[in-house]
Length: 61
Image (tube, rainbow, N blue to C red; front, top):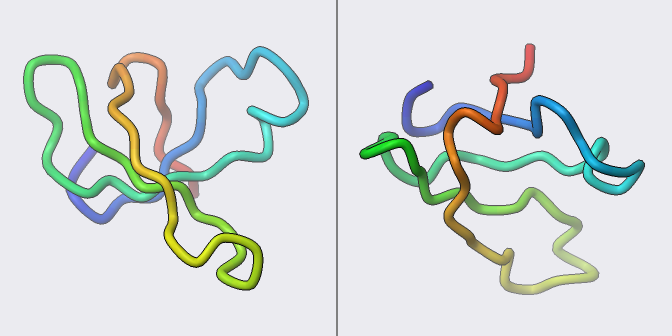
């Protein structure tokens, strides 16, 4: 994984998590990475960010 990759949860816990996609905001470091949610700008003007565990993520194709 590298900065700018689009990722998803490797094993989503529910149907909502299965739909979520994120952009890596920075390079993974120490097993964690800062991501920004990909969302509809008409619904959310500011896309939320969060720190996720790298092993929970998979790069989308």
